[in-house]
Image: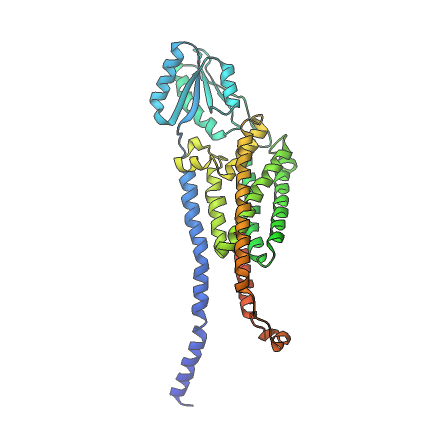
Amino acid sequence: MSAGHKAGRSGASGDVRTAPSDPALRHVLTHLITPLLMCLGMGLAYLGAFATPEPHHLPVAVVGAGPEAKVFAQTVKDKAGDALDVRTLTDRAAAVHELKARDISGAYVLDARAPELIVASAGSDMSATAVEKVFTPAAAAQGAPLKITDVVPPVSGDPTGSGIFFLLIAVSIGSYASVAVLGAAGAGLSLRTRAGLVAGVSFVVSLIGAAFAGPLFHLVDHGLWGVWAMSWLYSAGILFLGAGLHTFLKRWTTLAVMVLFVMLNFTSSGGLFRPELQNGFFGSLHAFWNGAGLVEGIRDLVYFGGHGLARTVWVLAAWLVLGLAVMAVAGLVERRRAPAAAPAPATASARTDGAARPGAGTEAVREAGEEEEIEETVGV
């Protein structure tokens, strides 16, 4: 065989080997876009929300009668600037009431011999620490030790009060990871069937959350049924919204639910830092985002006598209504798409030969895409 002929064969075989690699490489590079965007988004969200916590209009009170209390309060305000919102209260009982109503984060009781700082760390351990840092130097200037009284401490099973935040993470992961399974693998099911699966999965996720909160880790010592109910509202809202979005976003649903229910959700929930310790963006999200609704709802129920609970429940219910609305719109869109996607009648040979069946390749590609999407989301 001539050298030229061999070279021709070698070149031909090289083409055969390299030709399939180009689409495969493009396929991999396309799928790498999602994790890289997640990396960028997570860094921006978590570092933007948690890296430099500083007080912004943190509400505190100075307890005392007469001009001395007003002068002291004004002095604290002048030194702190926009970091604190300082008010004066006439007696200690009023300060305790406002702490339990979550109107203030701490109260400094003036006393020349035994100054006292009153906090409610179950509302936010970080906020209580921030208040302590503000008033400890004031007591030191008086030459008196500062007595710190925690009128609403967290339960013994959750000494730092952060367990509720980690409960939020667990329920969130169970919810948004299920979106890919219900959206991709369940794409061929009817809307009613998928809605039933969403309701069932959210029920199971909420039961798992209640088990974590109660018998397994004792994050709460009462109100477990309320914790379960709010967990179900929260999980169902994520699942309905995510399953509905899948109709429009397909494989980009993974990134969308990560942005909505991780990047913006965990950072604005108040589980670690209350909005008064965050910048304006994440602090403003806290007022209406669903993670904040769950975290603050559990705190209101377990520690603060239900004060503010109605508002947080309405926040969770609003997200569920939004999810149901998106799911309904998705159903309308799918019904309109159905006639255009209807397969042509199969020939006799196609019915007897699976390899020659029209659309078999398309179905295989669709199934492969579903598997990739599910693995992508659950892996995260």
